[in-house]
Length: 200
Image 1 (cartoon, rainbow, N blue to C red):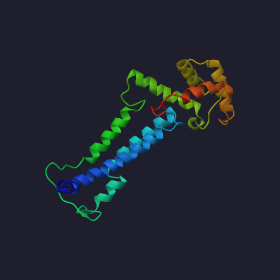
Image 2 (cartoon, rainbow, N blue to C red):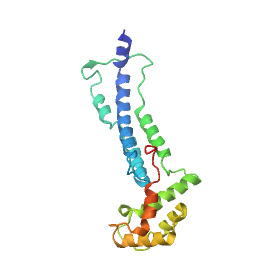
Image 3 (cartoon, rainbow, N blue to C red):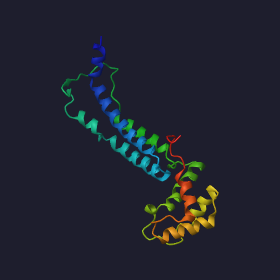
Image 4 (cartoon, rainbow, N blue to C red):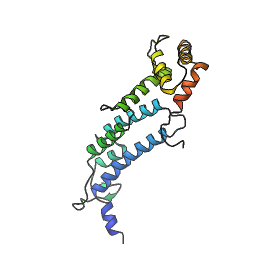
């Protein structure tokens, strides 16, 4: 009854494709899990997707854990004899597959190389949001360094500019150790920008 299925599953192409898909889905599952965390913010999500693009472009060179398992001796796989199969048993083009995944991820970034007007606004949002997080501050940050970014964010989120600017200055002054009361409305607003529909 299952002879045809067994024949199909023991072709070089099937095992090759299975390994490629396994590597891709493992990476995408990890990314999805991270993007669904409750504490994720837009900047971290952007960083994670950008990093995953680099990983996908690396995997097109055959660096996947499961793909490496099948690269050596292709006559057998875990003790099972493999065969060429028929003309319809085609292997996935690994380079094209992972490049396509990388391109699709890149198109989902808030910013990319071919930006429309709305994507340009998203790029500005990401750059200005970074001013709220000490880990993104330059090594020598001056007291007024982030004023312009805070103005942009306050205009976008309709918050009181002068209060938030005093807050960011105090935040810089204390070395990013304690979020001042005046800055909390802006930090809270930035923290609730939805990254995925998981919270819904």
